[in-house]
Length: 224
Image (cartoon, rainbow, N blue to C red; front, top):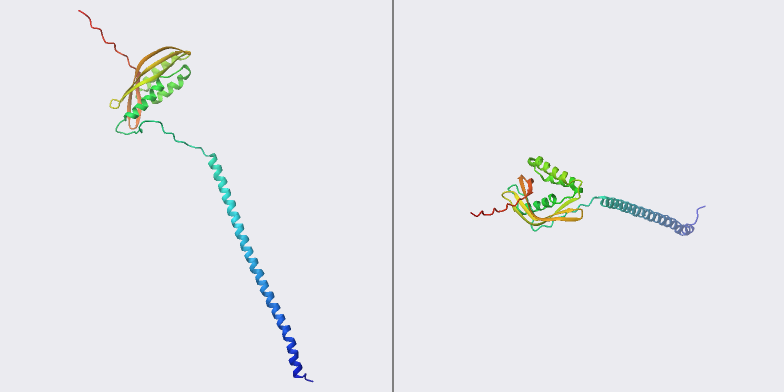
């Protein structure tokens, strides 16, 4: 027997909300799952960025540590400029007065100051300044001086008082007091003048001769 139309309409009214509730529940569950998936993706992205930042910081810290160790172990070099009145220059056209004065000053200090204990160093240092053309002659003179002074207690030092140079003739002279010591006692202090002869090749100034200047006493007039 067919159900009355009114009962069908009433049953439809009661069944419709249940279907809507099921649909709403399914839809809301899908939205929640989408939000959770999006949040998970975002958190993974933030985690990856944080990990990359951490790795970059570790790499930079390692590089800084390596650079610090290299800087600590590297030899330091300091360029010291000599205290001079004017800058020194070298030219193939000739020797400047300032340069010849500086070299002569060093040569005088080296050649005129010696002790029995420093004879080998003194001779080798002087020979380094000598030109090859005069090497044999100068070495023979130095060996004679060293043999005479070796084993003794005689030492000498020179106090410079004046210096003259000739850039054209490549010569120089120093004057001052030559002090002679025996042990700790000074036995003589004599005014002396020493001459230095040089040769200049290219940009190299070398010593070819040096020695004491002998003063020539003027002859007395003979009365008739």
